Length: 126
Image 1: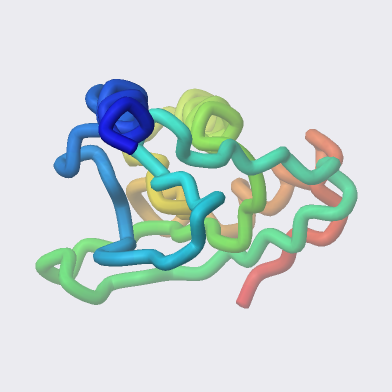
Image 2: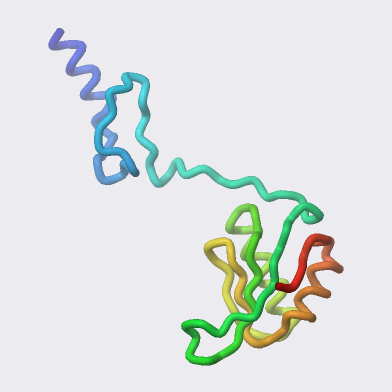
């Protein structure tokens, strides 16, 4: 019995409690803790099936207007590359994180044209 316990402890020794996410206790014997390294990567949907919504946003930005593109389904890398593409083509700054692309200024029509030329057919202005 003691050997079984020691083997189990040796196996779980690298399982640091600080790396565990969203679980306090589990009675499932086959349960594995999800760690930060194991976070699931979202597969990017095809361009023609992306329902992107383009809108003007002024909230919490000290009155400055930004074009906000939401509804992107995919990996952070693909989101950042699309954000960089839009920022370069519009010649402005911005950011891409948390499933949103922020382009500085009121460029809704230009962003819509660029997205549709790239193949994002379901893009629309709200």
